Amino acid sequence: MDSAKRMTDFLMRASTAVVDAILPPLCLSCRRPVARDGGLCPACWKELRFIDRPFCDVLGTPFAYDIGSGAVSAEAIANPPAFYRARAACVHRGPARDLVHRLKYSDRADLARWMAGWMVRAGSDLLADADVLIPVPLYRTRLWSRRFNQAALLAHAVGRRQSLRVETGWLERVRATRSQVGLNADQRERNVRGAFRIRKSVQPDLRARKIVLVDDVLTTGSTVDACARSLRRAGADRVDVLVFARVVPGQDIAI
Ligand SMILES: [Zn+2]
Image (cartoon, rainbow, N blue to C red; front, side, top):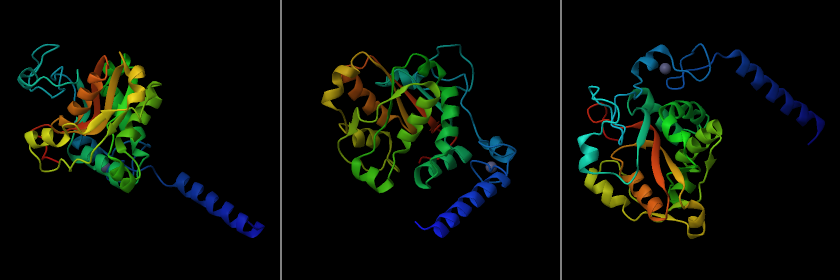
């Protein structure tokens, strides 16, 4: 590289840095200017629904009334999942939905850092005694076309905050599953049955571990349930689920 080109490159980089320093931070969701980096504007904050207690101790679905700590929903009793507990930072609607979409499709990997902060808060009980974080894997052709797995971005961001080990190679998606969009609960369950496998070489390492599965969105829970079943069959002690957003019937349309 000649010196003129080097100087041009340097000036370009310097001017970008200056512009970054001058421009105000933007709302993570709608890109309106906000007071500080990593926040939402007042309009988006108002729309965001964090999931706080009371909620079902197993599924993490919000309850309308507080019926005491450790309460479990009728749904969790009727269909006990393979995972132990699921927690979500917020309801999958409004700005939460925008963030999920932009993390997945718009090359905004930086969003994972902020989304992970909210997930750490929602999943503090699960993370406190976890051994390993495992992102829900994509099938390899989908990973190639999208270039990254949004669940892995979130798992790494949570792992960095909590100093927790992240294993992206332990759980594999062994067949392409059709998109879960538009499928009902039964169809979703059938769609992911047998889709996940534990890599043989990691089974001794996995035995007796407490795992937290990480994903961006939880809809009916059939995907994480299939993952949890595979992990437990391979000897994991316990599998919890932590997602950024979950669909709450009546509060969102299906994805
Ligand atoms: Zn906004």
